[in-house]
Image (cartoon, rainbow, N blue to C red; front, side, top):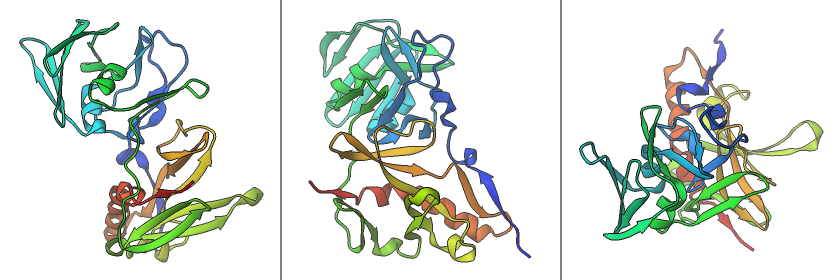
Length: 272
């Protein structure tokens, strides 16, 4: 008899406990950070959010990957060059002066080295690259840019909420299954499953679920897909991966589904 077990998500996701501020931070409360809708802790190279002089800083690799740009490091001059489209930003470790497309600017904090990583002040980087910055004071959440959604593709369009749809593309129909499940307390969970795993055992294959919430889910891997009024449309990812320990095919199918999840979320449409 085949045994199905839970494989820790840590194999694929970086734990979000790192969002808690480190001992060197000058802010005693944790801050949740999302870059273009993706929780910062889900990016490779994430070593924690650090707050210095009331400014949120992140590792340069996370900044570049999250904003869809390119980062170059000059060890001799200790300069970081970020390129995003036609915009080029150059910052120097320990210096408040920086340039945007060759124009000199000054910020009220400095890039620095921490945990053997180059940390950059997110607000100045985002604004320099033309990325919208949002600060949710009540929930202590910082959002840099919005997730790119509304992509139109051929496939199965699913009504998730009255004003929210998601489309499972034709080429992903054998990978994803949308399912609404009544949970304890009458809560209706709006889930995405990996089809092969769920067909093998209905207790596994769960990729995550949609929710409309008052705040982002900073404690677990999640996406901020969009806003509905003053609420957040979020997608909460599975904290543990459910697949077969013995069946390599099912393991691969599940991992592939997780990798394709952003493509599915890009098809979300929110109407007023």
